[in-house]
Image 1 (cartoon, rainbow over the protein chains, first blue to last red):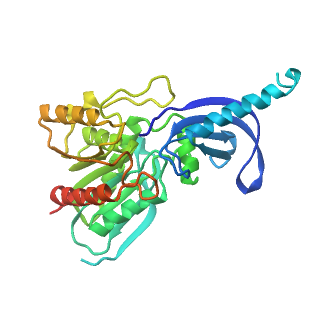
Image 2: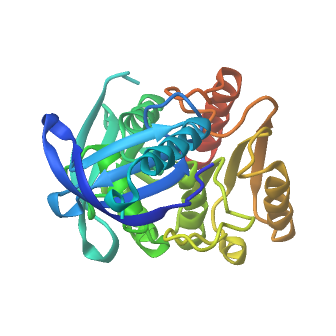
Image 3: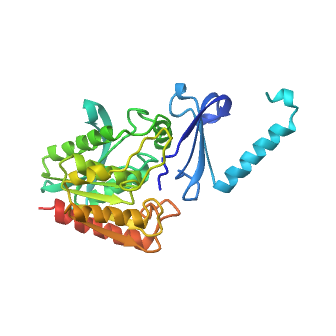
Length: 88
Length: 247
């Protein structure tokens, strides 16, 4: 199915994208829907983007649901492992 | 008939008079024939969808696939355009109707046109195919596993999608529906509901439902591809369009 489910969030950071160039990331779009490339019917998809630079300024990630949950856990663990004053 | 065909990218007039990009494919020869508007799926105006347009040309129809994301992302790669359109809320129903109408008008303006135009869509495009056939003068519509023709879409997300139950009394073209019995959206129960509504409204339709097939069984580049269902489905489509768009 097309879930249509889409969650947007503002982000502040950088990503390495088209032509191996770094760009400023301002927006994240998270959705669980059909992937373009991953061999699964549905995946958790994240677009790290800078819409001001056009549609091509995007790093796309498509993860199976299990992988996405592992990533969430890993991100939480990495943040937890750092001194609290560094991760405010 | 010659098997030669041509395909190219053109500009057409879409909703609100906007100029949008479209991919067209047509057989050679000047015999009169019907046309097909191909609605691309949510992942975009991609290679697989353009292959579908060429397949209709190979069958003997003129085909056009409007780029529904042209306004948000002109010239962008199909996946980037789809991501941009999604982040901006998707394609409004009113705009979809205008763009499909522009495609139908272009087809009917061709010297080879017999005046008949059908529409087909896959996945999100399946719903949009029904939507178009409820609002435009078309001669045949094909819905390939479109979710939320019936049923309740999720709430609280930026993409505003409603079901089409209140529009179905306005359906003005025969409908061919192709569905996988393993699909969850649309579920077999939602397909039953659509069938019941169309029966009640005396709307001509025929549904074919495939055991062992899930969503997107026509998608040759996806794990969901189901050879038996896709082969039978393509035969059903050709028979349906020949009957409704031929002559």
